[in-house]
Every structure is written in C-alpha cells, then in structure tokens.
Picture 1 (tube, one colour):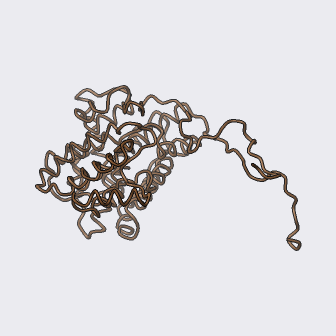
Picture 2 (cartoon, one colour; picture 1 turned 180 degrees about the vertical axis):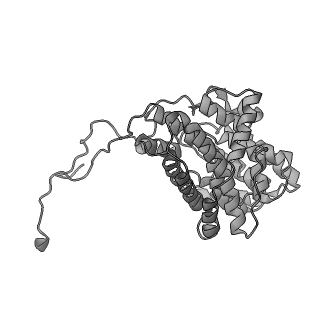
Picture 3 (cartoon, rainbow, N blue to C red; picture 1 turned 90 degrees about the vertical axis):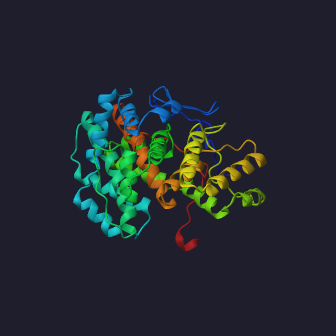
Length: 382
C-alpha cells in the first residue's frame, strides 16, 4: 500500500518491464516467432539462408528486401571488399589505443572517428555510406587484435568474401574452407534480430535525425553490455573454466544451488530453442573435428546436457555455440563482441535507413511512482 503523498497513477497504462512485448514500430526485415522458434529475414528462413547464402547476400537482402542474383552478389562482394580500407587517421588511432582499452571500446571509438570522414549525404545515398562501414568494421577488428599483440597488419584483399578475408587479416594465415563457412554462417545468423536492444538504440538515435555513425555508435555501446553482446564472451570463459566434460555436472549443480546465471542459456523472446543455436552447434563441431581436439566442444555439450536435465525449460541461445565456433577459428574471447558488431552492423545500418525513411521521434513515457505532494524545507531547517 502506498504511503500518503505517493502515486502510481501518473500514467493509466500498465507498465511492461523492459518494454517486453511492446510493439514500437513496423519493420519488414526480421520476423521472429518465439513460441515456435522461427527466425526469418524478409520472409526467408534462417536455416535456408545460413546453409546457402553468403554474408554479402544477406546485406543485400536486408537493404533491398530481395536476394541478389549472381551478378549483384559479386558486386556486393567487391563493394564491401573495396571498403575494407581505413583512413590513415583511423589507423593511427588504432595504433595509439590498441591494448590500452578493451577491443569493443576501441571499436566503438573507431566507428565514431570514421564518421568524421564521411560527408553528409542524402537519404538515397545512405546505403553507400553504410556499406563502407560494414567493410571498415571488419578491418578495424582485425587491426585492433594484431596491434595489441605486436603483429604487423595484414592488408585486405577486396576480391575475397568478407568472412574469408577477415580470418586472413586476423590470423595472418590462409583460412580453411570449414573456417570460412563457419564464420560466414555466424555472420549470416547474427546479422539481424528484430528490435533487440542494440538495434533499438540505433533506431532511437536515428529518430533524432542524428547521422548513421552516431546511430551505430549508440548501438555498439548497447551491444557491449554483458547481457547482450558480451554474453558469448562470458559463455566461452565459463566453458574454459569447466575445462573437461567430466566437470560439467558438478559445475551446473553448483550454479543452480547458488542461483548463479549460466551463460548461453535462456532468451527474452524464444520459448523453445533459439533456431540459430543448432546451426552454430553443428558448424562448431566441424571446426573442432578439423582441429583434432574435441575437448572444449564436448565440454560445451556436457554443460548443455546437464543444464537441460536440471532445467528442462531453459533453452540454449545463440551465444553458447557461437562462443565455441569463434574460439575454434582462433578468435580470443574478448574479441567476440566486436565480431558480433561486425555481423550486426548489417542490421543496424539497414534499420537506421528504415527509420530515416519513415521517421518519427521515439519518445516513450515513464510512469512516475514517487512522492507527489512534499513540502519544501529551507536548507538551514533540514
């Protein structure tokens, strides 16, 4: 019961914690049915897209709402490939800051700096700016990691697909076909996902008519949180800490007893398994089979098995097996969130363009629940 002077009736509508279930806008990009475990981009099932399409095709799809033909797909590969060149001033910023802050923090700063080198353009030209950003983020992630490890930068190759060239720029080695396919599937699967927290941030910023890079910077700040983009890093560190399949049961039991969150499980939208999870699991298994050491993958499987036995309703989400997939390719855990951004920038920029195209300032209201009738007391009498 409220004490005198307090009110919870400033707004008549019932609140929804975290805006859960509240529809705030229309979109024709991602369709999600959490009850059935369905995800589609522009009407195409995520299973078909992950199995058959490149990341570049998905970028084209999100921007144009149609899949490209072979000629258009090759043009997109070339366009994003040409964009994998950073202004010298941006490279200098990476040289100066890499290793002094987290990779995600530096990547966010890099995106903001890149915006200084883009002229203001009309709405119809925004896709060109957005495509440049998609290419530039991939190069920046690779550069950040190599610089902090004291390694020379690997020059981009505009003829290669984005996943292929990124692995080469990051590791300095020619990637295997399985590695390329694995990273490509990861980029496809995480490219968009409705009005998730970071995409919503991008659209809120775009709704003020701030520029594309400001909207993307907002999204990246949101993604960096451990309950969003940082979850896969924590999931991988958890798997590494467990170490072997034999330790999984005791670990899960202890977490449940202490009511500790087990990273990589549960989702705000999906009530059955995240449809992206089994695809990532299958590809992750192939990565570790190629490496000839299944220990960490089998540890992840054991954790999943124990969790589902102890908590049958707790689903496996996209973070769990994306962690083992990326780690198997050679991506360090603290680079996982930048890799997430490297994929999701496709969705962020597409949503930003969509927001600009039918813009209305996003301005929700809060329901005030504090005191409403208080008497002011001068400071010398308090």
